[in-house]
Amino acid sequence: MTTYSGTKEFEGATFERTSFKGATVRFSDVSGMTMRSVDVDGLDIDSHDLFFGSLIVNGVDVVPLVEAELNRQFPGRELQKAETPEGLREGWGAVRAAWQDTVDATPTELVDAHVEDEWSLAQTLRHLVLATDAWLGGAIRREEQPFHEIGQIFTGADQMGFDTSIFRAEAPSWQEVLDVRAERQQRVTDFLATATTELLAEERANPWGGDDWRPTVGDCLRVILEEEWAHLRYIRRDLALLR
Image 1 (cartoon, rainbow, N blue to C red):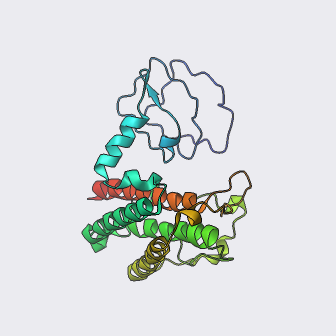
Image 2 (cartoon, rainbow, N blue to C red):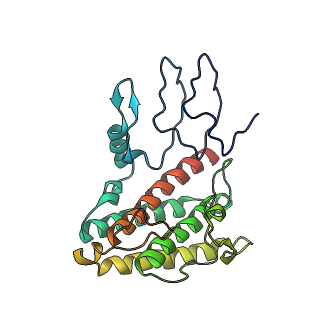
Image 3 (tube, one colour):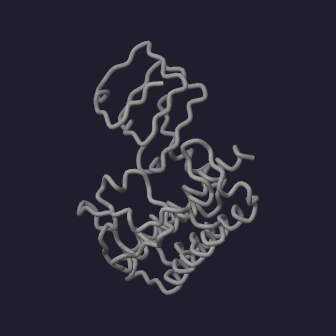
């Protein structure tokens, strides 16, 4: 099967009577794409940033419908957009409890298992350690080097100029993953316990670089919540397939 990577040759292109049956599109920009008179039976779309835009199906923007259903499936998820310290504390408590349920319900033999091209439960928890380190340690607390060595870096970080040498090459034990994850979760809990409205409004630098966005402390916390809920959805989906 042919793989296209890093190409812009299809921007603005028109495809007629073309079969994409069984094709996979990953880490790609399909914004503004128009599809007419197409067969979409079994079409599977997953977009972490879906609620920032629109998705029109037969003239209906389905984003609000998708968001409402996800909030129903994951009680407390709606609080990932909370603007108050109280709302963020409640939202963090909800997602932390939901993650604990998932970890407790996963048999040991599945913690390192994964479906094709996706992270295992252990890798997912390591990535959430990284996310906490970036947005709480790096952005909010302005730590010079906030990252734990077991953090799971995302694809393309090296191309962004990020020094990936700070991360350990060999995989940590499951117990170490759990210990570091619990410690990072407690950091968020402790920070939120004393967070004020004034603190949430303070500006910070984007931990991944660039000056096009100056997030507030509240924005950084909401990114942490979005990461937590998104990856919980991913891993529950994958664990269901693995079982």
